[in-house]
Length: 169
Length: 169
DNA sequence: TCAAATCTATACAACTTAGTAAAGATTATA
DNA sequence: TATAATCTTTACTAAGTTGTATAGATTTGA
Image (tube, rainbow over all chains, first blue to last red):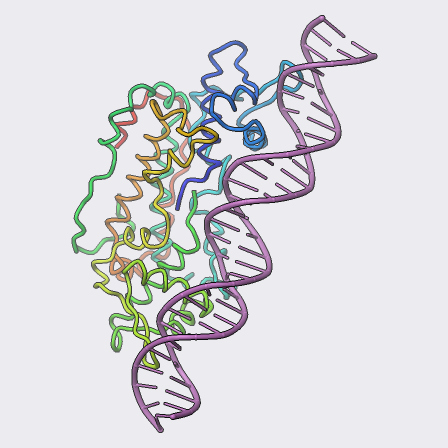
């Protein structure tokens, strides 16, 4: 359970294009993005190609070409970015893909793990749907030094009452 | 951003051992776990070896041998399992590991993405620290048919007010 | 002691992801 | 038209993940 390189770097490229919306004609070349992000031109090419195929950005070819966001930065959420750049955290084929040697997962009739993954996927989705590229830009210069506030406190693990997985919120 | 095979299968093996705590001497052989999960003996061997090295289970060798949980199922949380089976979602070396061609991430002074990953990591941690293996067992037969309740509703994406990343809860 | 059933360690192949390389297609401009 | 700067496509290598294979070490019990 970790963030892929494509998600991280892809999101950074999108943010560059969101900043770019405010300058000149709103478009940035691969070279410019690569320089601003400290990535190779080849790698950024690969990332932007994927974002274009997913429909989040559009390209102009030729000597004055470049990439730009297809929609306003206030309408592009992290959820859109994540969908374009990676598999979803927990999708409909997950159980089928983890059936081991069987043709159907041995737990398909009664699986409590599946419920947990759904709850976590829900939490992730809730956050990602709330945050747009514009939010991220407008929060720059405000988050530094405040990270300690949102790093999870180290709770003690205690035995406790039964938990109903359908009522965790 | 996805669940690894090791997390999924490892958790299932832990749950088998949690069930096993209630039968006989509380220990299960690799063969038994493999049969109950529909996995190969070789693969379960690999998974249990990792769980043992992480300290979550202990082994007895020889003809009467097997694995058992080191602690009561009510004291083993999903967070413990996840820590033993995979990298954490977002850890302290993440930014250093994603510095591209530079020696230090170009955004290290002012990064709003980092805040988002922290918020999401926090959400995941909150859920995982709450749920024990015992919770998962006691919720079997109760979750089936109720999944629709916790699958995230398809919200419409609307432009909206600025979000303060430090105050998302 | 010996055999069978178990755990242990390491190596291996297939697949996916990360990142690089190179050749080609497009377009503005001189 | 020719050139240079751009995007596009495909192939490639390296590293990590997934799952299998094999040989070895340990223990019980006949």
